[in-house]
Image 1 (cartoon, rainbow, N blue to C red):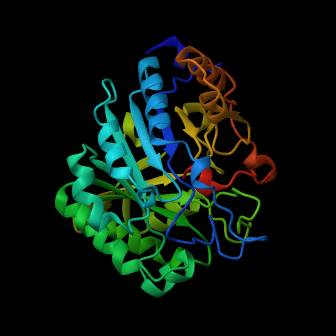
Image 2 (cartoon, rainbow, N blue to C red; image 1 turned 180 degrees about the vertical axis):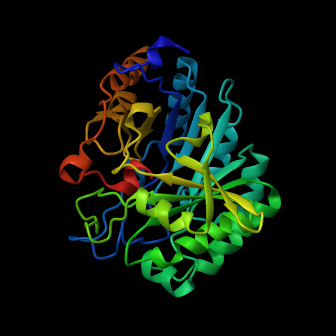
Length: 334
């Protein structure tokens, strides 16, 4: 691995998360609710990085030694031309894997094209399997469309992870149902601690539930056996859930607050506003877009990427003071 990708704490940065847009076809209460003070603010189209700019950045980071890209948003599939962009990404020499995080609303229509472009791994956000509650959380009555997308992805043969933001008093009575889904279907279900991200976040202590409590709830269904850390599991602590009837499935727990994974963090984020961010929960950003649009050379862009890696903090401090990072999740990329 290129030494340019090693930060000051000996972490090797192996992949980049690209937020393609801050727009979304849902209005989830913890991300971009309709009642944000001053109204919902989204970027103008010209403020987004153009696809050719994104491709240039990906080519540079791949030459530096990164081999994995994750496409996020907002909802990445709402951006016009995204399928052609993904096809172009798939032809970059040295890029081993392109992954996608999606809310699933457009997945039924897009799944075959995504598979043909070489994507095999999908993270699908789903916070409730009850249509009425899904509407209450997501702000839109589209549960059945999301579920159709999930089933289509399964039939085509994607490796599917279901991401569940765990919220006490909101969806905590469904955690067992989600764990059962991991046993009955070929999905890894991952429970994510509710994070205080954004000035208008609905996060509060009453809604937060720790991964330890989540493990206790899921563990009542059967035996949780930790699986050895795998390079592609990312921040999740993954377990085999072994039921008394012999069925097994995989569940994961992502605990950015209670047991943060900063020591093994291996990613950078390029926000939809064109700013390079070394930590989801730390507001320091580098203005990559301005450098791009002022005629910077590849070497100058590489130097900014390298400096961002060196500036990557050792960790965040949310567990100490429950501070709220001010970045907007839909721009940073979930």
